[in-house]
Image (cartoon, rainbow, N blue to C red):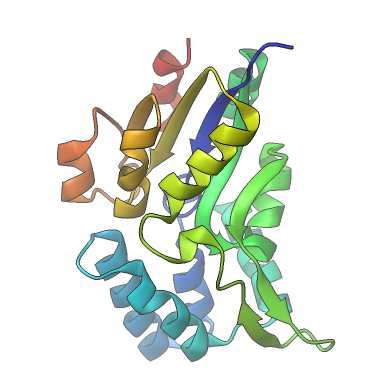
Length: 214
């Protein structure tokens, strides 16, 4: 069997227009939304470590399982317009798409299903029998800076790909540039200056990715 080609795709502000954690905060009202949005942007712009905000945001919001399902619906509603076609065509060309995210597994699952992406690498949230938040997988790599390249390297060791590409909008995505064959910065929803400056390729629509998948 030929070695796979791995296409790693960020979720928030890349495959979908929204930031899932910010949308969960929006359910708590405008003050909570503003607070969480500021924390998210500070981490994604590289002004503060992801570690500093990851647990704090969840402690503030304490999302329920039902609310995660609601965010899953919003991910699909705000999906990047060309994502489904691009991913279908990439698979035809032998690429294996993988969602690699610091978002939450239960919220991302509906989007992955919609896009027919079987492999999701994200952070599992824990809930009690009533669906109330009890915690998250603190050991998962993407809960901290350096987590995405770490997880990519683990998968490279396991799957021995012939090529790997990472696509994303944030600093945590850019960190993976040194461990993939190509990093593609995405600015379709948010253009982060550090990512735009450092990315070898920068696109504003996933349709522009097609030229780099041959």
